[in-house]
Length: 577
Image (cartoon, rainbow, N blue to C red; front, top):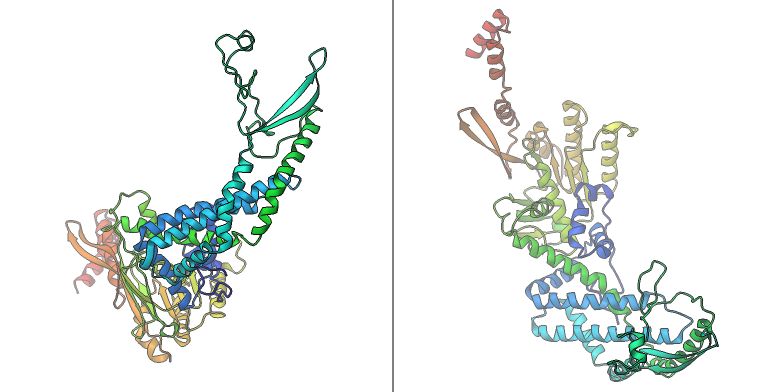
């Protein structure tokens, strides 16, 4: 019986919705993959879980439960880290090639594999027994019960009793003694194996002459009269317990052959005993390798952010048909991780601006407007990242969350002008939009950022209104971040003219207006709130801040005497009126 920590039914994995490459690139998901991977060997597995999120509530709750247990029981987390090291070692013994020409090598390899397997079982069993009734997740409960059953299995108990002696027989062999006959010119001409020993030979500790004449020397049967020569691989590195290169001396070939035969004879009784344990296998444990690593990476990420004063919460799972996404205190995970690289613990609490998000009956399609660099892209991306994490079964970057799974996450971020695009920038945007609507449903999430900005304002507005009307008719959830303030101003009209239950709402990236000696200044707050568009006032304040308002520029021209007198008088009269 196998157990998966990711899937409630290890034999049947529910279908997942694959997110397209555009979405993953727009959300900069590779950054999250790297932070969730405790080492490079696990990146591929983490990527698959994020790129192919599940929309099965049972799967999501199953995974969230494991994370909750690990966060609540730190000793369980540290214990699994130790277990993971053993599983990696076990995997190496099971997957690396064995030396087929040597029965001894196969026996020694199998013994080491069984030793690692037993150590894994014992570690896991002790770990779960120590957790006791504190363990709440279904997944870890299943694993605990399976490990307990294995630990109590009569075959494993018998193996544990026999294994120490079997290992001692193999590992007790430390060296062999070779006898060499010399001819009249002291050349080696004959050789034979004399004994198999339980001690290793050492190099000389005194000079040959002193040993011959007995000067302050106590004989030692395992001390050489010359230096200890070590085998080297083709790169000159010392090697041990690995295949040795062929020897040049012709006497060595038959000696090695004889030695291999003797060793095989020693190993045959052990091999016969090991046949009783053929069904003992660590394959099940190896399948847990990447799953345990996934959760350890998740816990590591959560604690890293919490140490910076940022919340990560377990999202409540709402039915898919509810089509809701409610987040309190959401922040952009990519931004937070970027800032934590150079900050000290607890330094981000005041630096990261969080926002509330509420997709539901009161609004499912949001037209987001605001000033340049006001946080529109950061906010839009934050929503997508939270949804991806949620559907991987992870915690999300917010104080509280209640979310419905989606059947697909589609992004449409502005593309750069590129000469190799056959249809041009607008054509490429149109193609991607067409692909989105060929697959999206009322249960999807669509994130649009500065879409249709590659054409004139009039054409963009015309196209954008049609897109928003289609979104409402589809009934999906969507964010449309744009500079088209007229689009946001038309929300009520679009709602009235288009049937559907996904209400269109205007939200705004706010600024505060301050007065100083230089005039009025608009400061970005990066807070996103429901509000009618405020594009005109933003433009005026930005113009005033940079000295390019009409009055400021006219004043500059007057100071330069660059204005036609008649035109200047008419302008001042008009301004006075």
